[in-house]
Every structure is written in C-alpha cells, then in structure tokens.
Length: 465
Image (cartoon, rainbow, N blue to C red; front, side, top):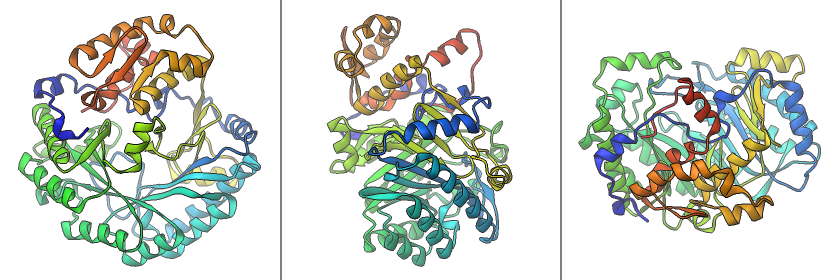
C-alpha cells in the first residue's frame, strides 16, 4: 500500500513521537556488557562453524570521512589523507584472518555491506585491496547482495567503474535535504546535479540497486524545501528510500551542539515533514515497507515483505537473510550464534588489539532463551507484519505463547484501537498505517526496557518519529 493512502492525524503522530529503539537487535545495545570479550566471541564463531552450509552476512565498517556532517550519529574519524586508511586496512586484514579461521569451513556470503564513515574515502587501490582481502577468505554466492554507502560529493566516476567491475550491485547514498540553507547549517554541501549524476552513473554501469537516505527534523528545514527535495528524488526514481528522523543526541555526538544556534523544527513541524514524505512518496508509487523505509512496488524488498521472508539486522531490512552476521572493523557489530559482538569504537584500540594478535571484541551479549523468544516475536512483527501465535508455536515447538505474553497482548490493544493493527486472541496483523509504528508495538515485548522504565531508569534513544 502506498504512502498516499496513509492518513495519520498530526496530533496522533505528535503523541507517538516518543523515544525508542529501532530494534536492529534485541536485546538492544545498551544491555550489552564489557564482561563479554574475546573468548566469548571466539566461542560464538566456533559455534557458527558447526553449520558450514549456512551463508553469512558480512559488514565492514570504514570510519573515515574527509568532512564532518554535523547531524551525523555514526562512528567516524575525520582525515584529510587517504594514506591513513592503509594502516587501518592492515588491521582489518588481520581480523579477517582471525575470524575466518574460527569460522573454519563456514565461508559462503549472501550479503556484504561496507558502511561508514564514507567507504569511498578509500582510493581505488584501497577499495580493490579490501575487496580482494574479503573474497580471498570468503566466497560470495552468485546471488549475493553486495552493497556500500557512498557520498555523492566525493565519489568519482573511476570509483564507480571499479565498484561495478568488482560486482557491487547496490549503492546507498546519503542526500538528507537538498535545500541549500539546510546543507549550510549541517555542513553537508551536495548539489542536486551531483546526486542525479551519481544515480545515473550507477545505472549506466549496471549497478541496479540504488538506495537514497533522506532526513527530516534538520535545522532550517521547511515544508517547501523538503517537499522540493522529495519531488526531485522521486523523479530520480531510486528503488528504495529511507526517510529518517534526525536524532539530536549531543550527549553522544558533541558536534551536534553546533546546530542548536539554528532554527530546529519543533515536534509539530517534524510531524508535518514526515507526513509530507508519506504523501509525496506515496503519490510517486512508493510502498511503505516498515518504519521509515519505502520501496517501489516491484522491488525485491516488497516481494520479500509479502512472502514473509524479509529479515532485519544491523544493516536494516534485508532480502538475503543469513542466520549469522559477522562485523569487521572498528565499532563493527556482529550477530553470531546467539551472541552480539561489538568491536572497539576507536581505531587506535582496534588496531592495537589486532597488532597483538587478539580478536578485537570489546563488549557484547550472549542471549538467554527468554531473549531469543522475545527477539523472535519482535522480528515477526517487524518483518512479517504479523505475530501469529499458532505459527510461532509450531516453529518454536511450544504451546504456551498466549499465556506467556498475556500482559503484552493486553497492552497491544491500544494500538488496535488506533488502527495500527488488528488483534484477536491468537493473532496480530499490522495494518498499512501501522507499518510506521512498528517500534511502538515492538517496545511492548521488550522486557529489558520495561524493567528499567518501571524504576525510572533506562537508556536514552532517538525519537520514533
């Protein structure tokens, strides 16, 4: 169903603009501990090695950027010289060697993604080196999704040609907002011509998948300016779009304090900006996949949603699900054999641990059986758009889910009353409008969040809208 058919009153959107996790993991990262370390990660890799026929997802974090965009919430390091990346790639190569040895014969990859930072900060020589390092240790399946994030302002035609040659078939590019006043405030100058040229270049070279990221809630943003951006991007016709709400978290990202001197959209304007995206993208033929993700009706992501095979991991929604995801690089997160792994969040520590021959895991979590059960409920909600207790009991070999989640089922009725889902004694189905509010419904199943809120504690999250 397209966004044009979604009518959510502004007052309802404003009421539901609360803080909450995005549930790329459960339990969420604030629950992880530095008591989980190298030995735990190695044990997880060795457990994963016992299923050599199952494919993997691989994520590589490349933290370098030549400029700092002030809205950025990613883990980045600003450098002016590409040569800094050589030492970093040495460390990544060591990590690939250590991790792949523990994985033994488990080497097939269904999904590879390079994030950042700005992966195209790397020179063509460095890009080729990284790809060769990975494909020497792992084997990409013929239908694997091979993707990376790019900055249209710095990505060259030569880099695009190399990426196409190497087999990258999806590119994700940040745009945020093309309004010059917004760009100047957030220090992200990027012309419409640069953006269009990069999309067209991808298509000319056979890189069929193009994702575009937009952001609402930025300083100096207006309905007219954001509407113009939406219209231009709709004409460019990326097959997938994400429209994120800007998360102002200066306690985590001090550079964001510099934005407070500008006019920041209040909750009412943020609501109208998101509503504008719903209507304009809906009119352009985009389907709401879930949360803030949109895709054209014939996109594999929509087909996966309809077939019930959509998956969600730290890279967001995925159409090539793999049972385990290995994270490589500084700050990278993995999800392997019932455990989350998290590498050091600075390059110096990451590189030093690898220079000493250690798997660099700094923190993580081994999930309990209750964590796994609640994770299954949340993933069903967010990826299948339903929680069918009969279906899940058959899959899990249980017959007690209705009793186990009786409290949660009662709490979900408020969302049924809002029209976000239909609910009976054994099944919840998310309505098209409810796809925008998956985070709210997922929070009902989050026992860690429930326990902390009961005593007035809990981590700070970004706004859900």
